[in-house]
Amino acid sequence: MHNDNISDPRWESVEKDKPVSLSPAYPSYWKEVFRKFRGNRLSVLGVICILLMTVAAILGPFLSSHSYEKMELDFTNIPPLLDIYQIDEDTYLYMHPDYYFLQVTEDGEILERLKPVENDMTARTRTFESGTHTITIDYSFLAKARQEETEHQKIFEVLLDGEEIQPCKRVWNKTYLLGTDGLGRDILVRTLDGARISLTIAMFATLINSFIGIFYGGIAGYCGGGRIDNFMMRVVDTISTIPMTLIVIMLMVVVGPGVKTIILAMGIANWATMARIVRGQILSLKEREFVLAAKAANAGGLRILIHHLIPNSSASIIVCMTMMVPSAIFTESFLSFIGLGVSAPSASWGTLVNEGLAGFRSFPYQLLIPSIAICITILSLNFIGNGLRSAVDPYGER
Image (tube, rainbow, N blue to C red; front, side, top):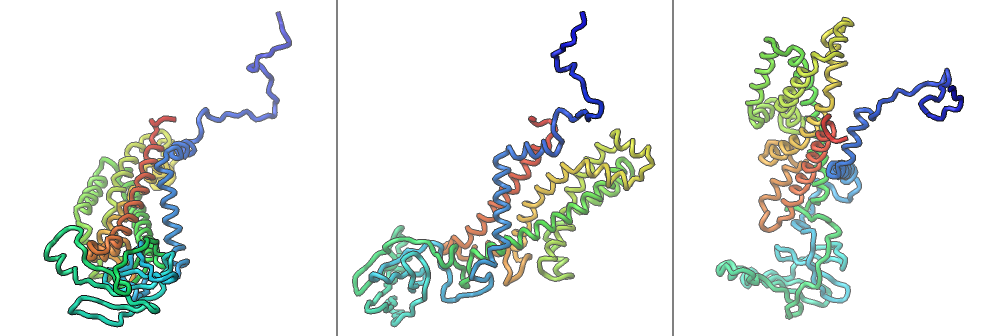
C-alpha cells in the first residue's frame, strides 16, 4: 500500500540545485594533528615557555636600564638576594662577601657603595661611617676558620658602634634582579641577550641543516637503490664522522671567530640526520599511486620531488626540525663554553656558563642562572618535539 507520509529522514527529497556535502567522517590531517598536539599538556607548556623566552629575549634588553656590556665595578658579584643590616630607622646596609658595604633601601634597591674610613690589614678589620654611626667588619676569624676547617665556623662579624649586629631580613635585589657578575654587569640582561644569540644561532643552523638535508636526502631517496644513492649516502656517512670541533677550528682560521662561523659550521656538519630521515620517507613514498599518476602525466622528477614527495614527508620533517633545535642550542653552548663560540663582549649561554664556573663556590648563581635557562629551553623544545611526533603518528588515538 502506497504511503505519501514518509517520516524516515533517509527518504527526504533533496532540492535539485542544493549542494550535497561529501565531507569525510574525520577532520583534515593537520586539524587532527593540531587536536592531538593541543591535548598534550607538556607540549603546550613547552610552546608557552618558548614563546615567553623569545619575547623576553627580544624585548628584555631594550626595556632594561642596564646594558649587557656596561660594567659597574662598584657593584661586582652582587647576588639576587640581599641580607641587609639596619643601622638606624632609615639606613640599611648590605655586606658584600668581599667585606665592604652597599647602602640599600629597605625593599632592596641599591643606592651606593660605602668607602672605608679605615682599612687595617694587620687586624683584618674595615671601618665605615654612616651618619653618626661607625660600622666595623671584623674578618679576622677567616684565617682561623681555614686552619681548623670546622663547619659553620664564624668567619666575620659586623659591629655597630662596638656591638655585634645580625642581618635584620633578606630582600630581593631590585636593582639587579638576578645579580651581577665579576665585572658588575647585569646577569638578567646578559642572560636575555644570550638567549637571543643562542636561539638565533640554533634557528638559522636548523634552517640550513634542513634545507641541505631535505634536498640532498630527497634526491638520494628518489634515486634509491642505484649507484647515485649509494654514493650520496657514503658522503653522508663521511661527513657524520668529522668532529664538529675540527670544523669550527678550520672555519675560524679561514672566516674568523663569531656567530657566522658557528652557524656555518653547524650547517655543514649537522644536516646528515635530516638527509637520512628524508631519504627514508621518499623511499617509502615514491612507489605510491599519486607518484605513479604524476609520472603518467609526464611530470619531471624534480617536479614530483618538490610538489609531491617532499610535501607528503612534511610531518616527519617538522618533527625532525623541532628535535634539531635543542641539539643546536646545546652544541652552541658547548662551543662557547670551550672558547670556540661567541667572543666578548657579546654573550651566549655557553659563555655565561664558562664565566660563572670560575666563581661557582663563592657565587653559584652566576652559573646556575644560565644553566637553568639552557635546561628549560631544551626541555621545552623536547616536549614540543615529542608532542609533534605523537600527533603525526597515524596509528595514534583519534
